[in-house]
Amino acid sequence: MKYTEEHEWLRAEGEVYVVGITEHATTQLGDLVFVELPEVGTEVTKNDEIVVIESVKAASDILAPIDGEITEVNTALEDNPSIVNEDAGGAGWFFKIKPSDPSQLDSLMDEEAYKKLIG
Amino acid sequence: MVPFAGYEMPVQYPLGVMKEHLHTRTKAGLFDVSHMGQVVVQGTDYEAAARGLEALIPVDILGLGENRQRYGFFTNADGGIDDDLMLANRGDHVFVVVNAACKAADIAYTKAALEPDVTVTEITDRALLALQGPAAEAVLSALNPRAAAMAFMDVATFKVNGVEAWVSRSGYTGEDGYEISVPAHAAEAFAQNLLDHPDVEPIGLGARDSLRLEAGLCLYGHDIDQTTTPAEAGLSWAIQKMRRSGGDRAGGFPGAERILAEIPDEALRKRVGLLPSGRAPMREGVPLFADEAATDPIGTVTSGGFGPTVGVPVAMGYVPATHAAPGTVIHGELRGKRQPLTVTKLPFTPANFKR
Image 1 (cartoon, chains in turn blue, brown):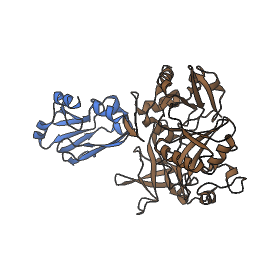
Image 2 (tube, one colour):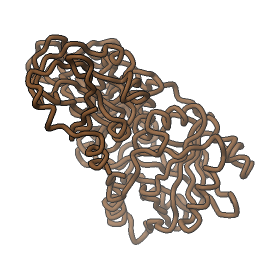
Image 3 (cartoon, one colour):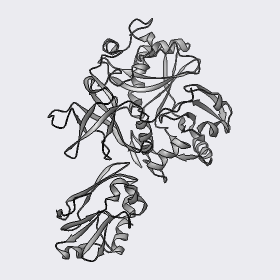
Image 4 (cartoon, chains in turn purple, red):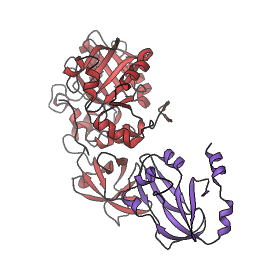
């Protein structure tokens, strides 16, 4: 698992990375009520705002953690955003991305560093 | 915790906004609303205090029965609303509860207008708690059976757990329930005692907002303010016949000319309920347009979010009277995209008061 400072996690799955947000992030956000996902095939650049999420409290953006192409999105979230609160690190994933510059992954945090970040 | 009108208040407790909201609608929620202003307005008798306040507030306060409460508001010379409030006839005085953000201004204004004949005293040594939801009656009446005998908008003073409680059967959620003023030194134990009941959970500001929004209730500074008139806000019902044109004590409050001219149905814009078509909440500030292509907005969302009980996003906002009929479809612009909303009757969830 790799982590970003924006509280996203990335898990390798063959050639692509599955991306979601951490349980810590969902606790801060509160119950999600809306998720807007990118289109499959979109080429994204690191830090592009590619997912809109709304909780009972506020709207937030999820940024692309790396450059790449969106290969799959978790459409189940569109009908049931609460999956993210129930299983942030599993069934609540947002999208899969195929890295165009795999070296960017080296600058992401490992679990230990992320745990330190959130204290 | 977030800053709110000079107080640090919790957005949510461990249950979270969604569950706190649903718990209040199905069982009972306890809210700490001690930030609100509690004010005693006293003259030589009730009538003197009521008559003084009627010069500032377009409500029939003289005709309010003893131990009964009414909703009202301070109006300004332009016909706008300076604050909304609750008024109770406590026999020899009027008890007023006002918004935290406005209380200093309200008290200064009322003192300047009414003293020395009528005195205005802020009660600073009492906390205010709200117990709301269908289980509220069972919870409070187990501690004092007098709670059960109260009807909606009744007020009473009785002992609960050995402390003198000033109780009203009212609230800000659309549910049955009570607002309870207790001595500050006893408040924590009082609240803990209520929370010990298995049906009672503490509720934060987040669910307080979503509950009142579903109930179609205005939040001062958002859905009503100094620029919105009672008729525009859909609050003409709070102005009794006695104070309207043709009534025995018609007018005599700031902005009366405009306010009364707009009743019953002459306001050019109106506060309406709005149901966004998609799942995306449309929050405060979202501009509203007559259609998908219109260049100039016709209004703005003043409150909006997800309604946990209705299970869809809900909103309120002002639109021209021409677009205020239920069923009218307008558009809101969200993240650069126009999305339809349907004008709908308020409240979104039926009120559950004990009449």
